[in-house]
Length: 389
Ligand SMILES: *Cc1c(COP(=O)(O)O)cnc(C)c1O
Image (cartoon, rainbow, N blue to C red):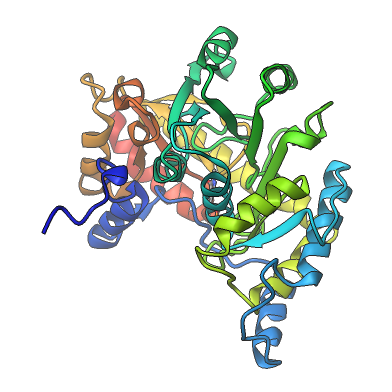
């Protein structure tokens, strides 16, 4: 028998999140690696799921997702972002943002196409692009005193005759970066000039700090017609295990993504869909206090990381803060550092090198998550303080 693994996935290995969470379980370390909250979401949302199960919403939902959730997504896009979508043709419910991304990439790319992606990047992007027979052309975000920045010349140089799509994640995992208004205009300019599609991953759209606001790519001039906007409820409602996500965009793009999505899961999460609709319709207070709570744990995390001796790159949004480990480990080997950390001080983090096309570019960078209760972050930071000694 030949190697059972398809050559398209050769080299991808096991996702770093599964590996590092297993290490946390094995060693009993505090897991600041994988980004999942350690508290439950709003009780109204949890109750709605329980009620849906008890009232018999347990069979296959419609292929597009239940109408109530599609309407709630459209209302949410209008309320928070001023974007209008037809819930019957321009909104599709998916098994998390992960499946929305997979459906969008598999449903729109041809073999040999190129996709421009800002690296470091969420690890499913490169795998799905490879499964589609296409390839990633990275544009690198470099840490600077003003946050992570890309070189506009590198973005322009990345565009070639086979470029089909720009895949943009803002707010950005793992850097905690919010793309600036100038950067968004610049990316939109490249997309319009070269007639490219833009797929955006906006799962952290409600988790911005210090008064920042999320501006979706689809709201920029000339972009609604070429942008597919993807998000999910996992991060916003502390329900990462529910895997309810969605995409919004022009009907032809949504239909193309649907063509692939229908053969992945077909549908998912029947009782969680009405619950997510309840979440999306919660008052502004919920969304504001969510971001405020996370901003507090981000501050605890950043202070602790600085005390431990890392170079800390400020996080503007998301669950994550990245650090340069070289002051604590001269060889800058982030993978070895993360493998040793649970044994040395009972904390798990994620090496950023796995988020780069060429791991060497992110070898010295490590990511910590702040989406845990304040007392858990404080305890983890006390443990990390031994590194400074
Ligand atoms: C968590 C995350 C996802 C996955 O979202 P799900 O809804 O759990 O599938 C996608 N993109 C980014 C950037 C993420 O951090």
